[in-house]
Image (tube, rainbow, N blue to C red):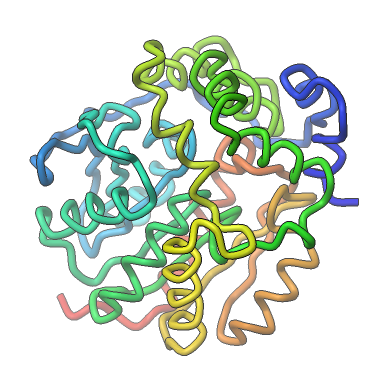
Length: 323
């Protein structure tokens, strides 16, 4: 039975997940320190914060819910040490980026990332995508394929789902989070994604220093809207219809594309189970698959060195940039 099913079986959801979430082996010396100064750039009606380290063709690290560029803190050094320019933005409304009065729907995040890439004039990009960073990054990359060198991804939102193919535990949790009243209680009042799901699916006990970094953007309930909206955005059985149509088109474009792909896998994983990986192997025969050890969903918190070195080694196999 997939880990996510075990972790979300019936019971009091707000307390059960931490109790049942196993810890896995992790790399030593994982630092809580964030060593990088963030830059800021005007994007549409707001601004986005980002890390920009190193030189050369850009490697863009895109996070998801409910994290920020902080999630990549222990991955970045391995890429920079190999001569990469690493850019890690905070999605709009998340991390240290601006918090404009918008809906924070999938399409909103795509617009801001499109504008961020344009503002920095990024070309020949290698994308590294996690969680909802996957949905956003794949969407952007398939509309700007000429500017994409390759896409590495893991535990990423990639395609629409079906309730019938979702195990009982995850189905119950997602339906509760998508319910207006119950979702507001969990995700706005209780800050459930930060306080429960993030530590539960990190694969190790996060320190108080690490949790303080993750909590910082969401100390005020009014700032938790992005984390509240994201669970409503994943299309199940065709709803939301606009997201279903958009993600389906992106997935089909990805299948027909020749953009190089790298899938990083972990044991047991959370959403990319062994069964899912086999489906992706069939749909993307050009894809390279590289295991990074044990892990759940937030693999950056257990295998940052393995992620950084695997991505860097794979980039060395890609066609050289035009610079």
